[in-house]
Length: 65
Image (cartoon, rainbow, N blue to C red; front, side, top):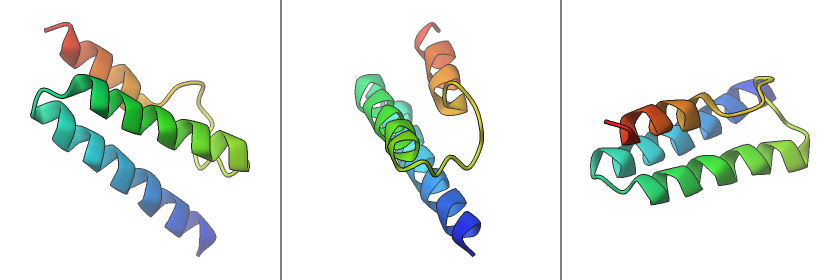
């Protein structure tokens, strides 16, 4: 159950970032994603092992358009 809760929290943060990115608020979206990733790392509760959030990579791509 803990893993499911972690995944849902991560999903919730990413969806909030998506909403801001769609509205053109890229910096706010980036802050949400970075805080989500740093919170997971500091608590040692990484759901997925990755150096950088997939959402941050997508956001970088979206900004370049």
